[in-house]
Image 1 (spheres, protein in one colour):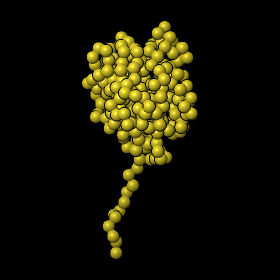
Image 2 (cartoon, helix red, strand yellow):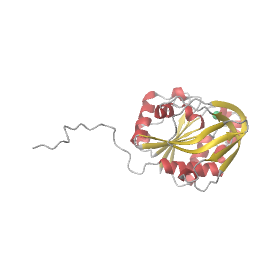
Image 3 (cartoon, helix red, strand yellow):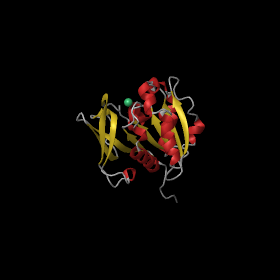
Image 4 (cartoon, helix red, strand yellow):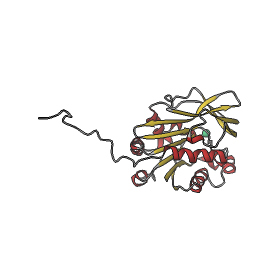
Length: 240
Ligand code: ZN
């Protein structure tokens, strides 16, 4: 599968905690486990200059796009966002990670603000599976423990998910719809809350397996559509 991982690089990743969590870089960690699962992965960086390396050619050759952003959501140019959202509507799958709940493509695709509560103090998160039959949760059991994570809590400003797979619970008492599938147009996308850049969440084997299965689930099952035109027809009535 052709996967593009669009991942921000920010100063927090260069901090002592960030480097300890991901000495190789968080984007490289995500790319590595997706490659290990047999995928063809392209990495694209978001920084203060936006996501200028996300070219039309890359977008149009992507079957599933991962998106991790936080500090530089607004730096991503609207015309790039439009192209990504357009392809997602035509059938490209997407996986939005952690703080991508406030990214432009996520808010455009959900039509909602993506607001939530947060507290950054490295609490234990237990992700409870609420649909054990779901392909994304295959073989992962009743729950996944994440030793340290940023707390994200309800109310989460999203429309009701089309498929709710995980609810995250935090030691502070909060909960979040943390593993949600949405369907828009001909495409599907998945939101997954864990993955703050200073905790090594994406090194946890169960999280890696879940995200590989999420990519498989949202991947297009038929070729991505060429366009979204509404064909004009004269009439379907019988002519004599
Ligand atoms: Zn975070």
